[in-house]
Length: 201
Image (cartoon, rainbow, N blue to C red; front, side, top):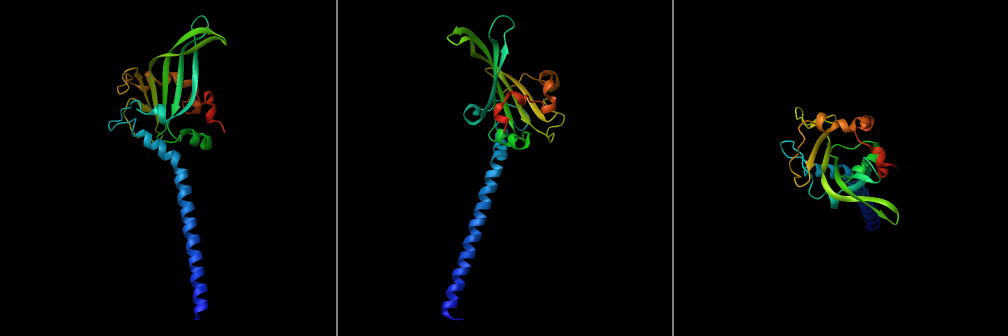
């Protein structure tokens, strides 16, 4: 083979090799991006569930989780709200839900429950979060990974934590202590998704 043909063949091989590397690189980056949301929620799970399947409030949720929405609980009498509930979701959970209408396994939801303060302001009667009462934590577990554990079932781990004690739950049985409040949301996997605009496409 002549030197000219060798040079052309070498250049052709180099171009094919470069194209293959480019495609491989794009595929790898694409897969990493696609898996990021699920991996993020799975990683968050290790910060919430210990080896004994006990839940805790994640240390970093305010800086790393996404805010889903806030609920105002009307006062028993008079104007304003008696409580406000601010709900956070672990990284990637909202993105995954928008795509599939389901929370992936490992999703962590944290609800802060506040006692409120209510006063008259220029905009009218206003209530705002005042004193933290505690947290409600849920972890998605469609695989029933913890059979026999009284705080796990129906696709979730469930626990309430009093303010000041984020590592020890006062819940003893999810059906009695937690799930009863979620019965109206059973059709949407026990979560009141209608209150979270960020879950809508």
